[in-house]
Image 1 (cartoon, helix red, strand yellow):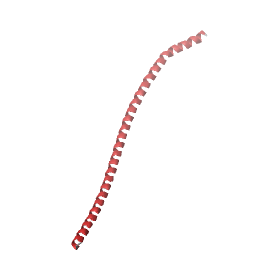
Image 2 (tube, helix red, strand yellow):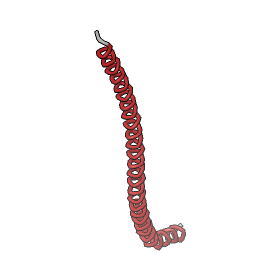
Image 3 (cartoon, helix red, strand yellow):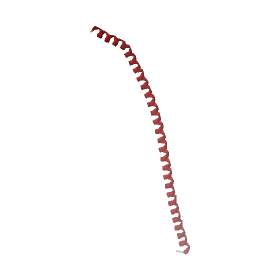
Image 4 (cartoon, one colour):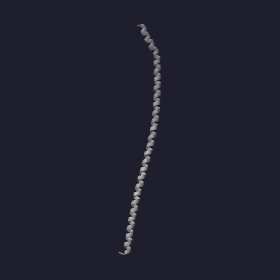
Length: 104
């Protein structure tokens, strides 16, 4: 083999080693970028999920408050109705008690 051929082989091997190092560095950079991108996507997904959960909780609390107010209003109406019915019967009850006392 001539000296020129050996030099060409050596240069080719050095170029190969350099390209191999560059490829490894590029692969490492791609991995790091992918990990960063994945972490950023995960954080955004978490924040979006938390926002949605807060929104759902707020909606549920509003609905619960409306239902509680309706139940309270219905209970008050029912109580008022029972009170009025009791007041109407109060006169009858007093009359009966008086009748029993007088007739004894």
